[in-house]
Length: 455
Image (tube, rainbow, N blue to C red):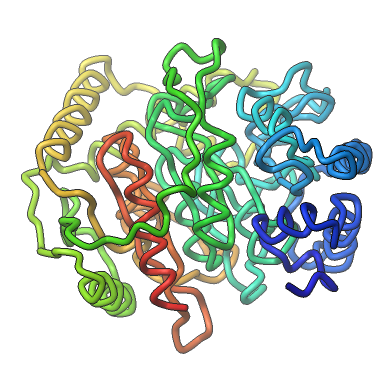
């Protein structure tokens, strides 16, 4: 293994180099930080850097020198989306209306990462409160796609996906409530995993806490699985987090897919758009899995119209977020966010209860399906131009942003997006894999089978 350019190494490669003493965590961090200093000004993936990162890398270097790493990702550089609290750093959520004071405590997943030995290098950018799936905010400006800097990264884990694609460290933590990990991962050509609800603990909760989850973004399936093992677990701050034994999600990655029943989902409860390129790479993934012994068939589900369901839940969340901000700070907000949120201020309690009932019906229908996994498009099209004109956010949500991703937030099951090549404009293309609730291992194993076949 060539360790001459540590910033280009994956997490598993870094750990191997640490073990053989071919590389130290301090040297790896310094290489990553040099790359960030050189390339981030044109990409803008970070909201704030962590001044304590060097000390953490030195401590990890000492542990490896003594042969006593403290956890499975000891010394590996990791970024955190600026929706999650990191002690001593502010949590701004992409908004000028938030406090610049440092957070007094770590979020539960950040606690877990520190215990696993991660070196936190900084916090990554996101659109304001995650209200839209685009890579810009009033606070940090535009985050650009490393594949083509005229293109959008997607959101709301904008900076995390851009950082992964730009080799600003191998491991990145995002959050996903209606596609906010998977969509930017798809547009930036990296792996994005939304875990099962409750697998990774959440606190404080965002506006979409009832369907959201923190999860990994990485360049390879194995790195994503490695990171998921460190993020998952019970934490008393989140009473809905699952009290399960710690699991190594890399252990079954190479088991193959022979005999697995995988359904091709072409209609997720409404006529979801996807261009020809998305269907072509889906067919390619299908062929690769069939060649490895998977049993694949098209499936049709009697789902409710989840597009209306999404708009209702999304709009209520925006209205609630706006209500939490004092009126004198409203001029600091994205005007379109304010306008959109106000349109949903009068949604009734009956409408909300009806939306929740339909969400549960969708989860029931998915649980009864009887397949080991589903394969479907990740996004409706490749990455659009950055700062594209946005006139009708609810329409964009359903037709341009998240038509294929939000179903699996509503049903709370695990789903991931996997890069499968590029189009004629050299922009990444991806597919999405979803598994039954709490079978995150299956989604990762199927993704690894495709990744391995692609070479």
